Amino acid sequence: MKDIKYIIADNVKLYRKKDNLTQVELAERAELSLDSIKRIEGGKRTMSLENFLRISDALRVPLSYLLYEEKADIPEIEQIMEILEGRGSRQREYLLHMLREMAKEMDKL
Image 1 (cartoon, one colour):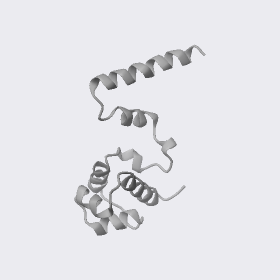
Image 2 (spheres, rainbow, N blue to C red):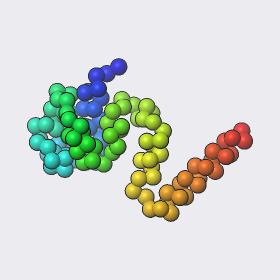
Image 3 (cartoon, rainbow, N blue to C red):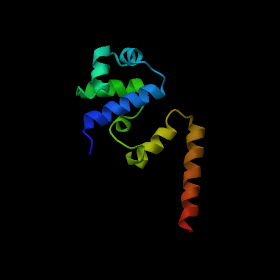
Image 4 (spheres, rainbow, N blue to C red):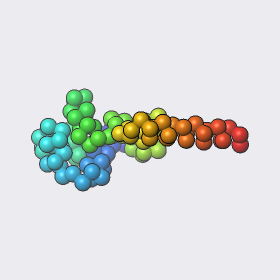
């Protein structure tokens, strides 16, 4: 298994680029120095839980998304929560209803 520092480094870079952020912009959002972001993305630095939370918030991704090497390894509940996050109550209700209905149909197979 890859060292956790490098998994986090790769994921920070991946989600930063997905959000079209530069390292400078991420540093500003997370209220960290540019040097810290560079060292984190290079796998050359471990970070405090506080800084880990800052980066997660700045990237707008759950903490667990930064910890797993493969998206498929992220617990299903976390994936469902990400889908529901930021949606209105009617949208959440509809999505959960659809999930329940699909589960019922699968039980019949």
